[in-house]
Image 1 (cartoon, rainbow, N blue to C red):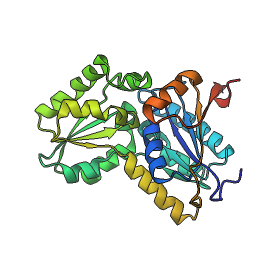
Image 2 (spheres, one colour):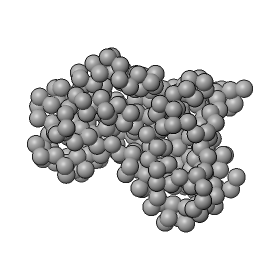
Image 3 (cartoon, rainbow, N blue to C red):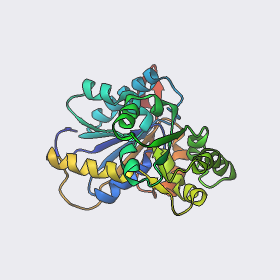
Image 4 (tube, rainbow, N blue to C red):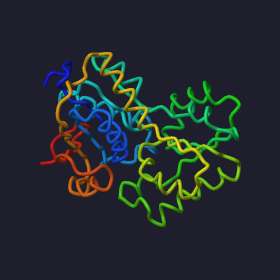
Length: 277
């Protein structure tokens, strides 16, 4: 498929199911766009991995999506964005990328107590995107950080409201609340799926910032600017790929985004992606 025509698909990738929160926002604003989604569940979570390793995964996944005709690629993973976004833009100048940037700016604008909490992975906290956002928008604000160990794994298992999931979140959030945080930034796309649980813990008066809607709006603008928006028509299909267990991914889809599309298995062979068949 030719990449630079409106009928080409959008490519989205994440370390696992977290990017489905971004896909859901994309589908709400751009239902006519065909989408290829790749969850690298064979390597999830990316957060604790060395940045160079995440760059290697991201480069190969991008090559796979481009070979599938992707006209624009959304790096729907904060860890991959932190580790690889500048490299991807340099390596693949023929395509535009939309990445995840920690939402420090809207948090700093919303907070009344001047204390915000950020939930993110180690890779995100180590990345230049986070450091830059903190330097630009975090002045005069106390920023409390937590890597919420184990949360991504719970979400990958579909345990969105399990006692263990709640315990992980309470351990991260309660110290933030005790120090006066009134705004919580979700610095990992997985975390959007536990917003109801987060809300139950922090109460109604704390702001929770999910970046997925802003990413969808940015995608709409880019497609319009590059004249790549697909003409309005009936809802287009989504094709899902996973480097993990295709059946388990397929069974989790209805719980996260609704079931709409085929799930195909991939595997890594000597650093390259290939069919799991």
